[in-house]
Amino acid sequence: MLSSLTAGLAFASVASAAAISLRQATGSVEACPGYSATNVQTSSTGLTADLSLAGSACDAYGTDIKDLKLVVNHDSAKRLHVKIEDAAKTAYQVPQSVFPTPDSSKSVSSKDSELEFSHVESPFSFKVTRRSNGEVLFDTSAAALVFEDQYLRLRTSLPEDPNLYGLGEHSDSFRLNTTDYTRTLWS
Image (tube, rainbow, N blue to C red; front, side, top):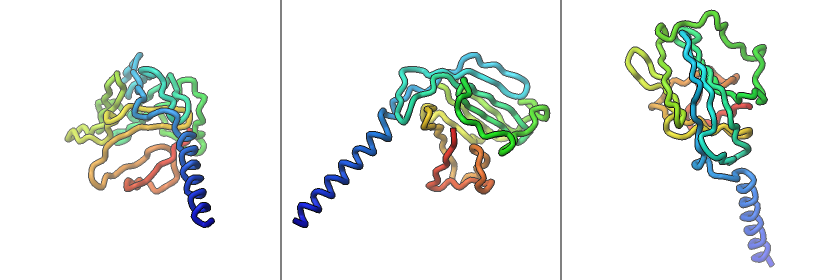
């Protein structure tokens, strides 16, 4: 009897894990097509662009958001603000009263910034480099951007013991932990 109970529990465990796995992912994230950038408008302090799904939706962990808006602004000589949001602005945004952003009237010219923003239009990816020495600080070209109603993937590689600050609105320490750390970004 004990062996049948153990076998029954093992089967129930496997069945439950399979059910959870099916609920969590309905498609493959690796099959997601990424986005293409169009209508790229540059200004002295940054750029804006429309991002559109570059192929069939993969809907891995929810519904792919078909149209996004990219806004890049050089807030100061040492701060670059990159924002990707759904074009319809239906996703929750953290209110300015909770996490205020710098006054855009104090933005600096892209040429006066210590950081450079570059991008590839299709498949869309971007890179942030240090102007003085060309050091790559952030590069999303390793994997396609996935932006769904319940899931976001924006992948970059990091050097050994990096100094990473300001990824998403949060109340953790200013310098972010980069060792086996998961950051929840609310949308």
